[in-house]
Image (cartoon, rainbow over the protein chains, first blue to last red):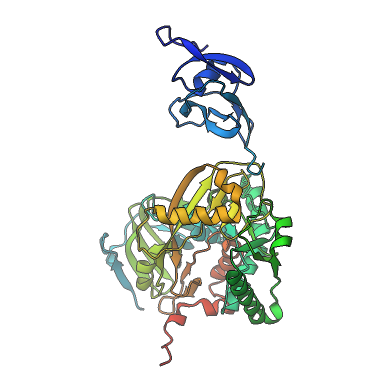
Length: 98
Length: 393
């Protein structure tokens, strides 16, 4: 469903989405990595548990919330990838007190 | 019989003889569609009165949309035990109101009344709070006031992740919280589904007042009734005098911060920190005297956040997702004002800054009084006549 445009830079940065390695171009967002990984959902909403994937890609809709490098509820579309980044599903509401 | 025609500055005066042909008559008009007006209108409809609820529109200050959402008792009525009783009475009516609204509308107002705490961040605050609660218990007399001053070690067992700066808290079993927006929606829906007439974009601009004979002009038409209830929040200050009433209310700004949703951590509300049913944590309760200025101010927002992070350090890790300010409807002494006009009987007014806490009383205690046409003596101390007493030299 989602495919990177052919003219973009080569995929050289390795990140891990739900533990699986994904190669993405330098400067791409974590949300792009999520979409390339082909997951059915990156989060479930806190109240109804509805599954979501990145939508607006511009920091507005919050449907791309993910746990990134251990920090919950980050907007994946606002985070630039770094080598070795770990992007995990956000299951409902975060834990406030861990 | 005395009859007074009047107009607010931005509306045309209507001569008494110039009554519109399309006047909508009813048993009672409620001016103000916020929590106070909607609760009273819901109660009046429940008493079987044909009730018209006039709402100004989105240009209004809408304190009900900015409310923090406490159903709060413990600190209300210092030096005024009648206010403590009225507030506790309202907290007691709340479960019935919530159940009634849920049954009628299916809307869950998220009421929880597990008791609540006021956190103290210094020994001085703890001592002051202890004195204040003890004094209120004395003032309560036979009515009683159950509370405890709880020291840090015991409090830490009650509240997960309590910060080291917290030295203790006052606790009372009466306190709780609810969703202000769900309450407002439920009151409106219950009112209209029971046959009440809700009229939006109907700011009152003029009309006539005579004993048990009122007529008001609005952009949405002309309305007439033998009874009228002024529940227009800050708008009451201008509206009341033309009905022979006095409601010297002023705006007091409060600012609120809201965190992202988190799994339930807090088992009870604190005075300035509460976790909602859906998981967000609300931080608030600043008080500023800045007139009708509804802007937010970063220094105050920072204070709110810092105090919250001192109370519960883990809150500092949460993202703030929303923030707003709103204007409380504040009388000179901070207490509600309830009155019936002596000059124009049938004209009532209700004013307070606790639209959520007092919703139970407004819907289930005050509305029946208005339906009977007489305010109970328990409300006598809330008359604006208290402001007329000359100060001792």
